[in-house]
Structure formats: C-alpha cells, structure tokens
Image (cartoon, rainbow, N blue to C red):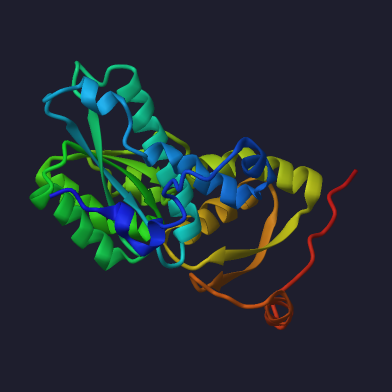
Length: 258
C-alpha cells in the first residue's frame, strides 16, 4: 500500500494550503521557497486523463527527519516535480508515474528497513533518492537481492561505485576522488602547501578526506593532520573554534609561491 506521506508531520510545510500568491512567494526566504516548490503535490488534472492505466511505481527514499532532513526535504521537492513533469507529458508509454515516498530518518538501519518495504511490500519498479552515504551503503544489498534498480540522489562515498559496486545501483554525478582531482592542483599551487583536513566522520566524509589527502600529496602538498567531526554535531561556532584550536596538529596553510 502506498505510504500516506502527505499526512506525516514532516510533510505539513510541503502540502499546498491554497493561500500562496506570487507576492508572498517572492517574499519568502530560500528555504521556504524550496519547500513551496512541492505545491505540485496537489492531485493533478493528468490523473483522470490516464484512466485506469497501471502506474509505474517510483520509490523515493529521503531523510525527511533527523540530521539530513533539510537536504532530504529539498530533494523530495525535486523528485516529485520531475514525476509531475513526466506525467503532464503523457507518462511513460502511456502509463503514469506514482511516487511512493519513505522517510529513513537519517539512519542506516531504518533506511534498510524502508528499502525492504519498498521492494517487498510496495513492489516498486525502481527507486531513487538518498542522502548520507552510510544509508546508501546499508540499502544497496537490499536492491541487489530484489534486482531493483536504485538511482542514488546524493551519496559520494568512493566504495559505492568501486569495491561495493552493484549492477543495480548507479549515481549520475561525480564522487569524492573526482572532486579531489579537480580541486587539489589549485589548492596546492594557488592557496597553500600545507593543509589540515576537518571532515564529517562517516562514510562520505572519510572517503572525501582520503581522496583529498592523496591528491594534495600527489600535487606536492602536505597534510599536517585530520580531524573527524561527528555526524550531527551541533557545536556552536565559538565552541567549535576552541575545539579545533586546541588540536595540537592544527596549522595554518603555508602560502604558495607567487
């Protein structure tokens, strides 16, 4: 059964109330405007036009609560806008697309359970979405076993498409090593020779730290030290500065020759 996600607490700011005008829309901040993009979640005219055509069910996995909720809610708006656009264009081979949305609460174990729900109970045709590489990694074996294609939304961990690569999982964007190869030459030759890397201490951050450290060294730079920051850290700016300042390995970048 399709999850009634419109009734969930995290969806209350996404659901259209019928009170939005052009003036109030333009007056909103960026975050509110992003959420308002989901006005397309209102039942659309194309539904009746498709008649009884069986829909293709698209599983949409996002962290709509927890650490990565802000990104997940924004990504959900984009996903549903895309589905709405396809449906307004006639669907796929005359069949509409139907979103089955799940919230994995920014947690790998819950992500895996929601992946199982999508494949076993909802019997979706494909799945897309995903923030937090540790969640994506936890879900990949589920899609492999179910032989269900999963398009990752935002997970850059290196192993996803290397040592843990699956024929059923792909991502249409770059990843940590590609970013490091592109950025490190400029960092070392134009900004500084000596670097200290602070990173989010989970799959994505660790992959990014390793990739940048390798490329900095490859380009003649030096990594003086690294600092893993726990996922979901809510340290204030002042306390974070004191914390980092207290690390004995902390150094300032050495200016590169002009």
